[in-house]
Image 1 (cartoon, helix red, strand yellow):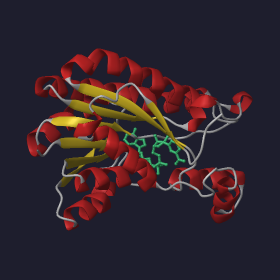
Image 2 (image 1 turned 90 degrees about the horizontal axis):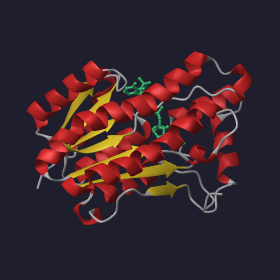
Image 3 (image 1 turned 180 degrees about the horizontal axis):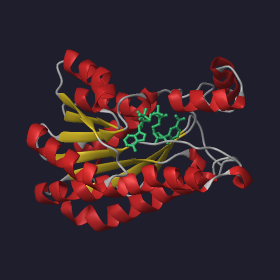
Image 4 (image 1 turned 45 degrees about the horizontal axis):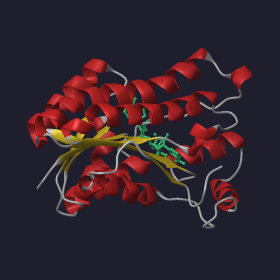
Amino acid sequence: MTRTAIVTGAARGIGAATAIRLAADGNAVAVLDLDEATCAVTVKTVTAAGGRAIAVGADVADADAVAAAVDRIADELGAPTILVNNAGIIRDNLLFRMTENDWDSVISVHLRGAFLMSRAVQKHQVDAGWGRVVNLSSTSALGNRGQANYAAAKAGMQGFTKTLAFELGRYGVTANAIAPGFIVTDMTRSTADRLGVEFDDFIEHMAKEVAVGRAGHPEDIAAAASFFCSEEAGFVSGQVLYVAGGPTS
Ligand code: NAP
């Protein structure tokens, strides 16, 4: 059965890999990001492999844009029943230097974004009597220097996930969170830039802290998302899976 999946922040990084993986699993995929044009590469990768995808531009923190995007996806691809809330930003700073804007923008994209997207998609899931929600948390949910805003948002994603699992479970909808460790993407590249270190040196340094001895890649997260979105994962809900190459403290 072909289902329709929405992956937010899917122009690049973890979102792009997840969209490509869910399409390879047989789903039609809405590749959603802030700017529709930036989704073209992900869409092309899916369609070149014989899959079905459309590019959708929307700011996940904007309620009207989210409603319009979900309506359009339902019209063009079919009712969306799989949602991966992946869009994210970082605005790292030590607490005494963190601005209100740093705080508000991070909380808004991650938490308000996941809330608006989930609220818009849940009616399609409830109508279908089936659904999957996957929310991107982070090992930073456990606390991380310079990330008071991001850690709060990513811990919030875990509580949000568990609540969706309780509320939507009776309609055949599961909700789970993935908490990645260090993944090689533009987001971690920007952290290296901020710290003034070469990205390759940063990756090597971070990999030393990982039990399996390497940094993570977007496909590592996409594989976990694929499992949570599968038919056979229907009895797994409200869980937080740390995908970090080792145990987390
Ligand atoms: P990334 O490479 O920076 O990609 C994030 C994508 O989200 C970008 O395409 C970005 O668009 C988009 N986005 C940002 N704000 C948006 C908004 N308001 N509406 C729609 N799209 C928006 O990040 P990533 O490393 O792949 O991370 C993906 C997710 O995993 C994030 O939630 C992140 O917090 C989480 N995560 C990442 C890591 C890691 O090590 N990389 C670890 C743990 C968790 P623009 O390019 O236009 O800004």
